[in-house]
Image (tube, rainbow, N blue to C red):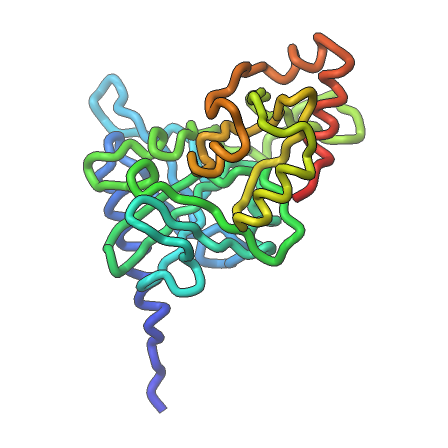
Length: 269
């Protein structure tokens, strides 16, 4: 009996070709490497290049990890779609793997019906106790257009140096690994209780970053511009943060601030 090539495989290959073409025509040139040996939630990586003094293209060693999902019309992946937004349904095992990865992970979605690519940085502060989570995409801001879009600008994420696991270095460390978020955002909130926020986000069925509320202010590690403006209007008095703090300074300034950070880390959705 002849071997059958599934339509899902063909759609997946179209997504790879589309993203490869985007990288080849990107300025500066991006090196896209597929990781096909194992499929644990990462499909490949892109490496940034630069032009040296001899006008030759050289690899920089700065990379981003890529998870590429392809679909014909949306199927089980795409829900709540309109002209401006759609939500990608990520499974819990994927989310757990992305969150544990040491490098930044970029979720790239290819929709064959539109022949378009969309990309977004995976927010590693998202928490879930559900089997799946909805990740919102803006069809304009997250669109990857060949020869036009700068990848790092579209995903609001810089390339990072490759982790050299073979390199040895003497370090002094405590038992626990600690990773600070880039910023702590403070928002003027309409509510005084975390429960009120949970009720709204559960009712809307959306993914939402870890947070805590103190004295009518909502604190989070994530810029809430990734959340739908309609949802933010229900939660906040002002959609722009009233303060943006560097974590270490924030923690050192007041004991209360240390408690705020602890509550954010330990919060659940």
